[in-house]
Length: 60
Figure 1 (cartoon, helix red, strand yellow):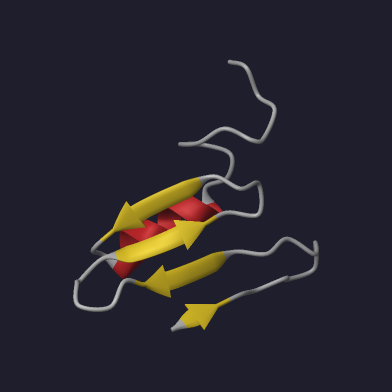
Figure 2 (cartoon, rainbow, N blue to C red):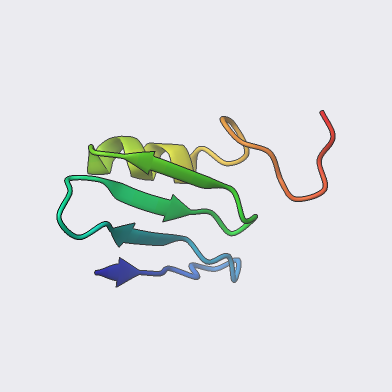
């Protein structure tokens, strides 16, 4: 299963379920990735952008 939402900003968030596991794999519009078993944790990580992950090209 995969979902994407461009909202009003054109940003795309993607969540894939890893078959045979309880793990969700998320990819933020910036390319950062995160894995979690809890869907709420996954969406909080994504929607908390940029807290918790770096944007592409970030050095700090």
